[in-house]
Image 1: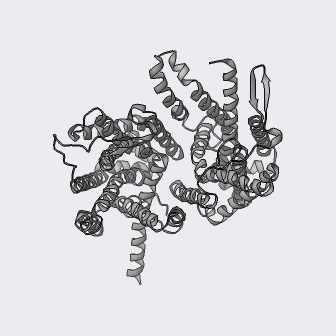
Image 2: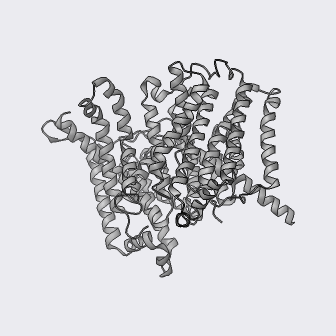
Image 3: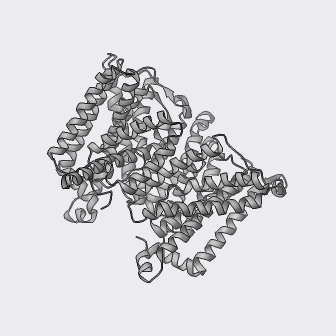
Amino acid sequence: MSFTLFIVQTLNGLQFGVLLFLIAAGLTLVFGVMDFINLAHGVQYMLGAYLAVMFYALTGSFVLALILALIAALAFGLLLEFTVFRHLYDRDHLEQVIATFGIIIFLNQAVKVVWGAAPLNLPIPEALAGTVQLMPGLVYPVWRLVIIASGLIVALMLYLLVSRTRVGMLVRAGATHARIVSALGVDIRRLFMIVFGFGTMLAAFAGVMIAPILSVEPGMGDSVLILAFVVIVIGGIGSMRGAFMAALLIGLVDTLGRSFMIDILRLVMPPSPARTVGPAIASMLIYVLMALVLYFRPAGLFPAKGRS
Amino acid sequence: MSMLAPAMPVRRSARTEIAVAAIFIALALVPFAAAYGAQGYILSLFVRVMVFAIAALAVDFLCGFGGLITFGHAAFIGLGAYTVAIAGAHGVTDMAITLPLAILVSALFAYVTGTICLRTSGVYFIMITLAFGQMAYFIAGSLAPYGGDDGITLPARSTLFGLAVFKDDRALYYVTLGFLAGAYFLLRAVVYSRFGRVFRGARENPTRMATIGFDVFRYQRIGYVIAGALGGLAGFLLANATEFVSPAYMSWQRSGELIIMVIFGGLGTLYGAIVGAASFLLLEEVLAGFTENWKLIFGPLLVLIVLFARGGMVGLVTSIKARLTRG
């Protein structure tokens, strides 16, 4: 377990955490403000990646692909909101789970039909494709740093948006007292639509940014979706700050756990069982963390104020 | 009306009895009809239907009667199945040992995880059951001696006191049917019992139940253990039916499918869970035979059912009937 490896894995964990935050932010907003469980949030991330691949093939420019993918993802998200989700807001959670599960099944297959089942990839923009030396002996891919930076910028923007603007104020109020906000004359439907569209774009943005280092394939949103739920539950549903902290925590715990669990176990047991047990514990680690958090703090680490 | 309210009032009505009798008679006759078709295929399909019906019954018991929406019930199926597979790998294939063991293991898992899960409620309960389901899934995937991610093939189907009772597909079919009937009547008895009334009361208003003097947590935990044990039973049967066990049995999509089955059949009816499991798996089979891209039809169908057919298939039939008798 060398120090450089530790730094590299910490950066990887940070990058993973930032990615989770981009997805969880939209999820927690939608969940917090509209009390709507959107399982289909993961497929928005997948769609973002696929759209970027498609637009890149058409335009040959990453920036254009990014912009077009975001616009298309937003349009698609709003279409879904208009045709399906809007009718689910006042249903109970179980019905929301089923209907959005149906959308996952549909979109995963639709993606397969349109783009094929084989994994696709998106090249890293040339200017950012190389590596950079952070310290003597520590070389790190620039693109991962770009992901971390863009995630942090989005987090800062979100913070300013939520805490300093009128829309943000309404969102915060809506998360805790949706009915009163509506009674005060705010068009809650429009607010919902804005929040939903925004969340969709964030998920798609995450998908586009990660596409160059992951393979773009059907079902890529499913595992990320579950992780994003873990994040918002640990962070406290509806809390943006909670989502940010929990996303970084999960990203770091998961990445570092996977890299070093075997080494840690070897301190207390012989190497051979450590090699067997290590990966199992590493992949369970975040779920254990979630169970622990919920056991001691049933409403998450940073419960949105006023929410029971 | 929310879907969480039972689609039908919880009481013994003649109509329910007829529906239940029809379901079980139809299932008992399937092997005779199967003799005229692709027997092996039809029998194995319906064994699968009944196995998932047992698990769906457990989920309906929790969701429909207890208001406890579990998103991790596939873990119990997996636990039951893995108990059979692991015991089999060590040469223990007699169901006199493996069946009680499978039920015990899943009941124990339900007791431990239930103690933690039931501290939370609502969305948090959904998520924490999901978390435990994922844990079980990853543990199974890391069991390298027992196949890891690839799963493991059973050496043989279970025996009973040395007799190869499951050798014949029909025998397996009728044993599964027997267990399904047992599970159904057990749960029905539980729902109607004093325990069941408290359990249902806790769904309606936990605070009031607690105020009257019931320890709601204890009742819910017992309910959770019953449902977990039934999941283990389903897993035992599934392992025997497929002679193969893999972590995929425990994936969160599986747990989601169990909920869909219950919704399909109509929540809080018990026999709806059997109807739901059958319609889900048969629909999947029919659509898959119709087109390779059956999921393109299946997904939107789920959305439509939620949007337009409250109370699932059973509710749909009831409302159509009501409309016909009114007109």
